[in-house]
Amino acid sequence: MRITSENLDETVELNLKIERQVEEHIAYIEKRLIKWRSLPLEERAYEILKEYNLIEIPIPDENWGGAIRKFANGIAVPIINTAQPRLYQYFIYWHEIYHLTEHEEMDSHPEDYEISTEFDLNERKADYFASQMIFGRHDLYEYYLSHKHNDFLVNVAHCMKSFKAPYKAVLIQLYQIAKKNQNSQLQEQIRLYFDKHLSAAEWSAIFHEYALDDSLIKPSLVANLSPIVVAIKEQIEAHPDVELYQDNWRVVEKWARKYSDVQKELKEHWNGEL
Image 1 (cartoon, rainbow, N blue to C red):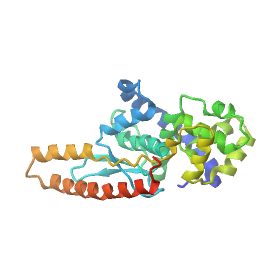
Image 2: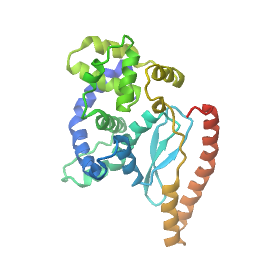
Image 3: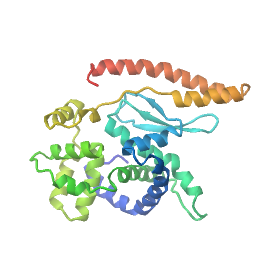
């Protein structure tokens, strides 16, 4: 379900219904974050993804943030689109972590533990999990209200920078808290701006004017397949006669050639601004 101003209330209601399950999953994941507690939050997520042979490739599609690819031997590998703004990449880190680990959590619970197989609901859980990992321990609402700029987008830009979160993730979380606090004025303002789409250049202008780190709204354009390359090579060396490992290797080789060219084209498009 694509979230718009029209179904924003429905989204918030759904968030409240899945809140307990998401909180339980956060508790499960936090046990894995202990060894990286000194790192920034997005780097902790990155470390988890590396354990699953993370692939980073630039894909020129603004509606595609990431996915989990299952190879012929059953291994699930997360893929992050590095042509997306860094803020969005960080959000997708947590979204894909939810999908990678939801069945692990199920295995650690008693037999009556349930995970929904409904696609839209599972995607909403992954998004809400990502949102709560980013905002959960901090009061976004109070932080937003502390900024007194007359321009709503400027106040939101400060939130995007400080929480390293994408535009709509900030607005959904802010709307949910505003609704809880019966702040109808803020709710109406969020609905008014929710469907607004600013270009990278427009966001860059706002971030520059207020001395915010505009690298966060630019893509990283990383092309890194080395974790899965190493993993497949190890399997080929251990099992040279198993054809499926060779098949996996051919897929990854094709990707490496393709996205090296895409990376070059996108960097030229950004004209040295990164």
